[in-house]
Length: 325
Ligand SMILES: NC(=O)c1ccc[n+]([C@@H]2O[C@H](COP(=O)([O-])OP(=O)(O)OC[C@H]3O[C@@H](n4cnc5c(N)ncnc54)[C@H](OP(=O)(O)O)[C@@H]3O)[C@@H](O)[C@H]2O)c1
Image (tube, rainbow, N blue to C red; front, side, top):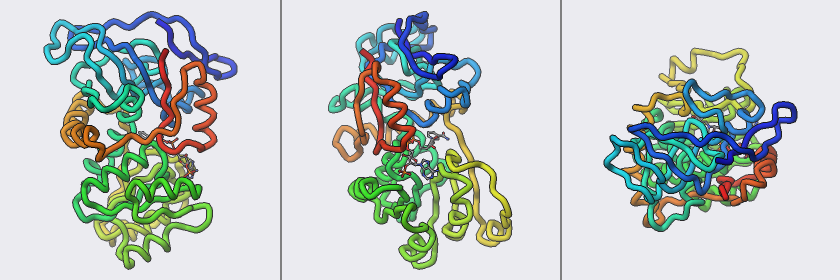
């Protein structure tokens, strides 16, 4: 099969032939029709985010496609079924083998390109906010990088839970999109700090959950913005991972929790349970358009370098989808 590989010296991406994976008895072999970019792909390309043991070394954390081989022990899927799934690697290719348990049926109103934009963003957001954040109706949640793939998914999930969402973003266009998805406040962090705005909108009570991928630069404001029993769920540290002068007293006094997570390295059972619970919550909502994958661009895989550059420059609002031709 063909796959997108990384040139050792220049770190550019190119398409070449590699061995086609083989599905074991509990797996499906899927012909990939579309995949989508994730921030982690940029790191993996530069050699800074190696795949977990046993995972494909090919980049790509999600895909949508058609089942072409069904493992002997699998009774729930048939050849020709349209599926989409989270991957621990291997999405930038013509074929991938996946455990049958993590495959989700593509709602009939969604194209392969739309379905490919869902798994990583929505499962990450669902896991971080609902499982780790413990989201409840009526709570208040702050999402950083609100217009990112994960952010645009998070806003919609929070809205569907009947909770209130505030975001931070870096452009006016991103503010508009987040508000249109259901955020009640979108702060442009390049113009003003978010802390005062969050205190104002919550009448000084603060938020119950923060979903943070920024890290060091936001640490103090995040702690200052959390309500009593608040949870800070950390999924990345794009501004850096070292914080000086942390005061533990605020964490003690307000009973705060700081929770870190990376979904890719979680065991299969965890991902299976997450996929199943998310499917119950989300598939019917995708079908009736209560949830929608937010897609910035769909590009051919010939343009993969251009796609990575676009994400590196923080241009995308929602997902960049790649068609596998
Ligand atoms: N732990 C996990 O399991 C997990 C899983 C998936 C994703 N993630 C993380 O979640 C984040 C979102 O992922 P994604 O693929 O959805 O991202 P994305 O679509 O590429 O969006 C990232 C956005 O973050 C903002 N940003 C970048 N650097 C920043 C900085 N230093 N300070 C403030 N804002 C910054 C930019 O938007 P603005 O223009 O608004 O600044 C950028 O467009 C990434 O950090 C990713 O690594 C973690």
